[in-house]
Amino acid sequence: MKDVVTAKPKIILEKGKPVSVILDFASYQELLEKAEDIDDSREIRQLKKQKLNFRPLEEYLASR
Image (cartoon, rainbow, N blue to C red; front, side):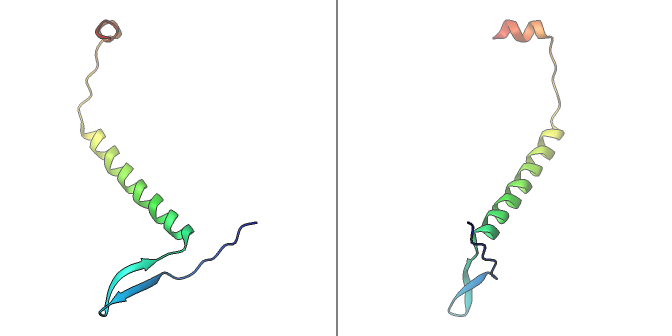
């Protein structure tokens, strides 16, 4: 049985300034997944900008 707790993030202040945030684990995982998706999107955009170089299969096999 899973206990699901959805709470607002808790902001930790030090001298009146925010220094940390406490999230429930589900929100933390979701945040990590979104960050990974953004990183993947950036990498895909960079790869699309690269020129593709094709060579004959025989040449590739000979170089192995």
